[in-house]
Amino acid sequence: MHAASGLLGPLALTLPGRGAGGALLGGIAAIALVLDGARRAFPSLQRTVTATAGALFRPEEAAALSGPAMLACGYAAAWALFLPRAAATAIVVAALADPAAALVGRRFARGAGKSWAGSLACAGTAAAVIVATGAGVLVATAGALAAAVAERAPWRGADNLLVPVAVGATLTLVGSG
Image (cartoon, rainbow, N blue to C red; front, side, top):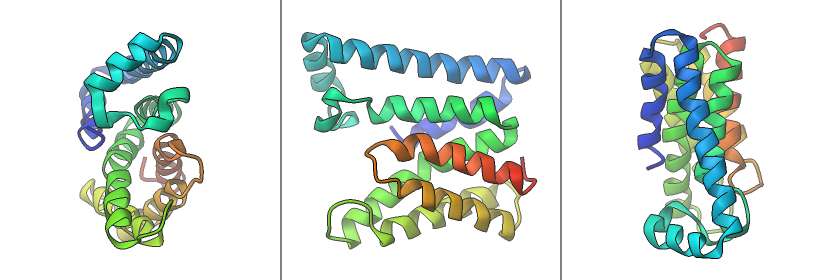
């Protein structure tokens, strides 16, 4: 689901005008926040969501903002703060680089928490996505470093918010937005 959510960036980019993409991503973020609040307020809803969504929610997210809600907010923030091309690229990076970091980190770094192996996977995936959009190696390197640093945030789920914003900011600053 995390990787598939990256389709929202290119989709928002194809909508007419900047406002339509913002409405799409902002609306998804608002719905995610409302559902997260309702999920925590009503134990029966929490049980239903957990039974239905399964692996989308971690057990520790039962009393906190969920990863999917944080990701939706990160996408909406990137779209609101940066030009559409930079925001769409940042959304795709966040959708693909974070799962790459998790998969590689779990496979090659046997400890708990963030790993350098996962951060390298994040950076490599981010660079590949940015190069695929037509950016040069220097821009891709800057974006990849921003993604890897943001992915290492020590708070659970914060990377879902920070990666799209950090990458969007970097692409904007280096002139690829």
